[in-house]
Length: 154
Image (cartoon, rainbow, N blue to C red; front, side, top):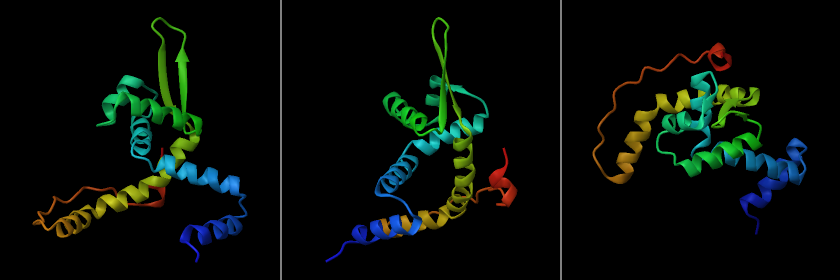
């Protein structure tokens, strides 16, 4: 008997010409980016359009703890999506900024975010139905038109 992961793993690696190590790294990256806080941190830096200090990020990423923000920032830096700059001052000042890859990742994610946001009432209705509660519709969202230039601007 074969499992889905047994079949898909070997076909994915062969299909894209990846080694097992490359596929593992790719899976790790997808897991990191798809994690609970990574996209929100990247988005906060993207919207600010300038470097941010830790405390400002903590304010802008609603619900994240100091510990989780620290871990997320370290992983994003390790993956090359943000830079961390330490200024030799007293007290030390540390700022975080998106790299080119970090900006490109958010540009790639933007159409998906708009798609999700545009269908939010459908998701809310599905959840209400599943949970057996009455569905109360949400107000319409004012979403930008998705054009090719929107996804690559900035």
